[in-house]
Length: 317
Image (tube, rainbow, N blue to C red; front, side, top):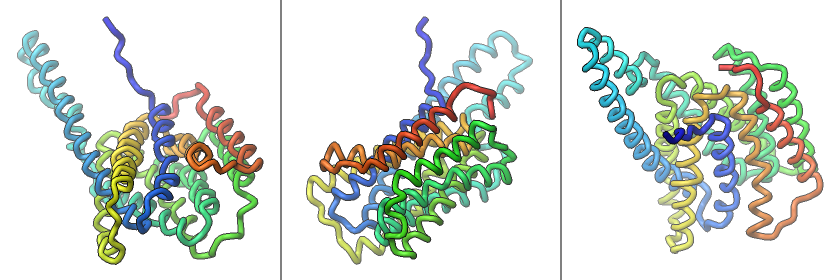
């Protein structure tokens, strides 16, 4: 019998970060207003995630029905208990979960996407990335306060390494951006951290619903910009926005929703710091822009921090 492949939580977050890292390059290549891009990709991502949710739900139902049929033939007196187990396994969202968790998580992630776009418009991309990716620090504090997930010693060391790596990575550009953009980037880091905490809180339910709601809110909230800044619907722009919506946001969100069930909120954001490291790599490959020495050194430190935090140890779930 072939062993079934199961993607680990760390691997899912890692793949998610790779997809996230392509955002900067494709946003530069699409000749639209930033908020038109944000709204378009979120609209497509919402469609993608709804389809994924429906497919996975149907697959789970079919599996549960087969299991139920086999077990009922053995013993009839356990049918009622089995029915309750099947409902809990197939439809975990039917367990009690405050709508506040899904709504707050959705609003926070929608704000993260919108604020980050604004920040990139009002300050340097380097400043925006650095200030947003202080989020593991906020995730550690919020996860400690809300989820009672106390970071272990490896995560604290990794947090310090990430902070040092990010400072070296783009430290030379600090102070060069506008104050408003820097503040918005800082806030987006806090909202990003809070998003992971609320998704972690919903790990036994349906974290993907938070992602769906966030993308719907983003798409609806940016509708006025489609009127103010009508997009140029060239074939290249359409192909690029399809990639951003279905792959860079949609597939990445599905991976993040899956991975956040299996790792802590701090660990998820430590792994996702690979995103700003890979951003210049895609720019180098496509545009030919060579990263500065500070970016190479800082990026190496971040990769080491992520690898260190991912070493086998005590299960933190």
